[in-house]
Image (cartoon, rainbow, N blue to C red; front, side, top):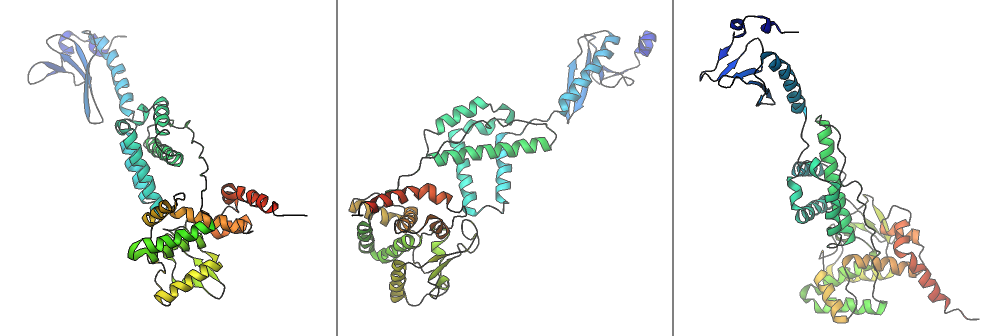
Length: 380
């Protein structure tokens, strides 16, 4: 069926407007249609999302131009409604914003996530310029295969986890904005198994020598460093979030317990206050500290918050395996178990909430080793 303008005389068909330069003819009764005067070719013209699109309809015939114009408009409007997924860098900023306002995470955990982002950017810088739909599963696999050879297992797992979290934030935002559903290209990459750290702890006599070395060979801060080493070994507390916050008011001499409240703002790791018994060695330590510093008050009882260098130097000089602050927590658990304390009880003293599952996994072998050692002493 011919259009109304096709039925009209040629002069009627030319009810149009010319552009100021005389090159383009528009038709008020047929919006979005243009004709290039010089060649006679018809063009479609439409504005989508603020951008003007003009495209040749590949015809000089009026009726064909009208039909092709409809196809042109449909295609451009469909394309215009498509929302490009955000770039990975944009998803990172959204992730950081959510991280900043996440009240369930402690500051140290947030700082660690930012560290993982830094590691991710350092090992895959091109990722920041890619849109989410441009990141392929194969590229994720290749990146992860290289990363696992460069960093420790737990760092690898957390960096991979951070990548997945950023992708999910971007995917969720894209869907919320009407962009449709995207699959995470890193979804199929699995965490690696973390190898259990071999506990190489000093024997009781070696630990005594270690403390003496720290106290005498660490300058003016030696005695204070020694207090910290012993306090961590006899109390089993985490150093930054727990031990350094213990005050004189947390020492319950009547019940012979130390109340572990943790950081005044973020509390303990699991956000619960717990009580740790004052072991005989801890009692001796606290008594000596009171003699040197006087009665404990409301201030933290420890005079230093770290002693990495002194600890590492002492281990080297004594020829024993290097110890960290956290290794002293392991020492506390190990000595308790070897002394006959059951693992669920040790787990509570450590502040675990899993009923002893983690402690059993970490220290369970000690029970058997100690049992076998004791069995050798039995004679008939």
